[in-house]
Amino acid sequence: QVQVVESGGDVVQAGGSLRLSCTISGLTLHNNGMGWFRQGPRKEREGVSCISWNGAITYYRDSVKGRFTISRDNAKNTLYLQMDSLKPEDTAMYYCAADVGVWYSYCADRTGAYWGQGTQVTVSS
Image (tube, rainbow, N blue to C red; front, side, top):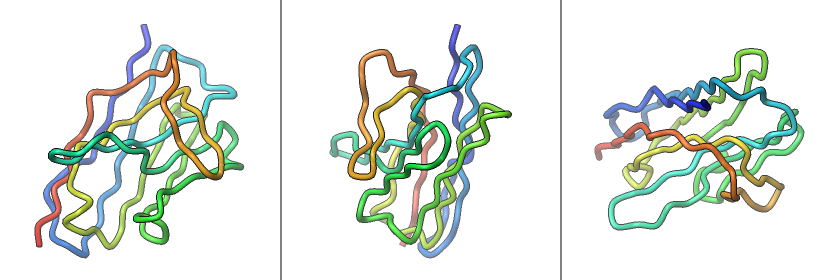
């Protein structure tokens, strides 16, 4: 059984930093894109950042470019998201997903992807 578990969410002041982690068990990661998605209050879920299986391709939505950094450690089956210079508009539930579509211009859910339960990030002004 595949399990996807996120951690690292917290309440932080604007300008602060957080590092999200996502550990995946029950799935051997190869040729799997992985990524972070978020859903804020009264908003639709959106792709934040995704990374290809070998890290050669990364996608960031425009609003987080230069502030967020995605990385992965396949040996540890773990995905990370370093979030710096956080803004109140970054407040959302952040979800990790494995086996998603990723290219330089998009980060998308697809049939068969594995999702975690989410970790809450709250940025106060």
